[in-house]
Image (cartoon, one colour):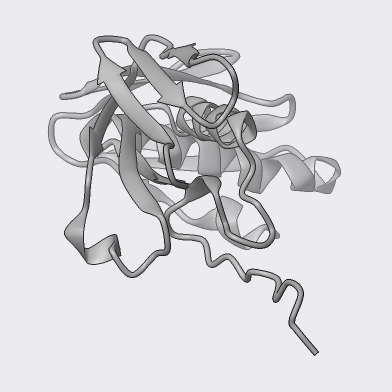
Length: 186
């Protein structure tokens, strides 16, 4: 039995769930999300609790996945998700202009990234991160769809991967980066 799949999902007040044949629709104060239901998995809604059940052990791999996707949808429409990215490097900068992010990342041209619908961004300089060498800006991405938020963060991190020696680039704020030593005079 899947440990994750067995856990019930308690629905907070203000959240309505509609279980259809092939998807679960979750409505809450922040918006609406739909989650696909894999073959062999069935959701049951009883007294404010959503549970996932599988037909047989053949679908064990999808049991925990389906429950986690539905739980993320419930969390997204109530609280939302956020991700922080640090822009590190001399001369590097990031600006938010409406639904666009403008970057100067050491290339010969500025980079313009259009945010998809449902994702919002803000850029600010956080004083507590001054200990990071060459720290410039922190981008805070937020939205209700965890998968889409992670995809946008990955695309931004790919624009300029962190350098192994100085750590310059776009980095995930919560991740620790070990830098290489470099040459030493003998």
